[in-house]
Amino acid sequence: MAVSRFALIKFLEFALAAACLGLHYHSFVDKQTSLMLASATFGGYLIITCGVFAGHLAGTPVNRRIDIYFCLLGCALFIASGSLAVEYFQNLGKSQLKDYGLAKAALAIINGIIFLVDAVFVYRGE
Image (tube, rainbow, N blue to C red; front, top):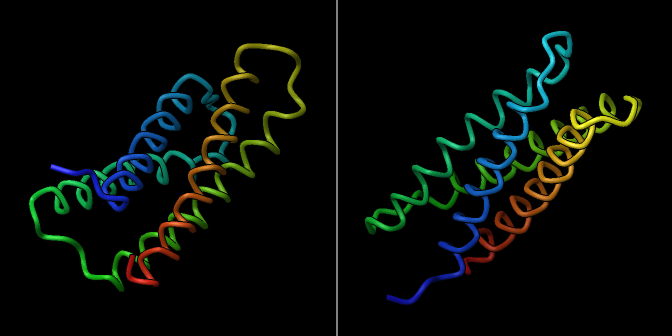
């Protein structure tokens, strides 16, 4: 069975969301209420991408409009979560917490860009 570009992108989105959630767990401080958006984004999109990927493997893909909606919303949420994380962690002193936080921010922004590219591919019908 050949791996399609769609399956590869969806798996990459899932893997990056899982990595972001793991880094979020290790970098979460109870006083950073601005990053609660990241908790919802990473956890929610872990579930969404898993479902879309499983549906694709089962031969029942999601409607194009819904897929574009999830991709564009994911793009906005991941970039917003990454931006909030950069804002919070950039001013901390040198520590492992800062490293985890900035790594989480970078992966979230990268995943947001991948969601945007995925939306373009879905829109073009590729």
